[in-house]
Length: 119
Image (cartoon, rainbow, N blue to C red; front, side):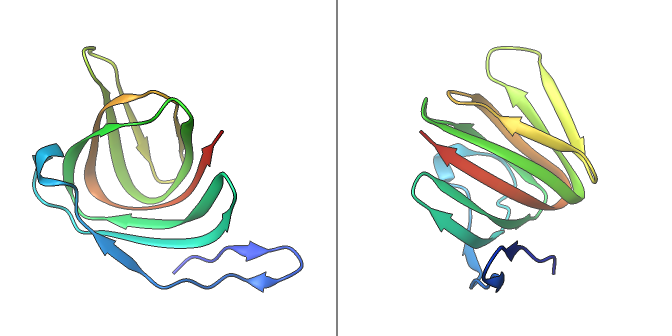
């Protein structure tokens, strides 16, 4: 497992939360998702996320955005009503901007650092 260190506190700890995409959002499979929220602060959450292969539709609120860095695996983000697709693999980073609508596709089991900011 990767680690996140918090200045002035040391290594962060978290229990694993397991969930699945909502059935009405599923596109392919029913991937199990593991979230380790390792630091929460008003308007920000960060941690480590694992997911099996699969795809589901996502809709980000206008006040929510995510930065992520893939540690292992590969994902694709398909923009709704467009042919635009980005693919992000191990060592790469991506941003899901406010108001984004599309499909999140895990093409190789993924592990990523994430930072979600709400403003």
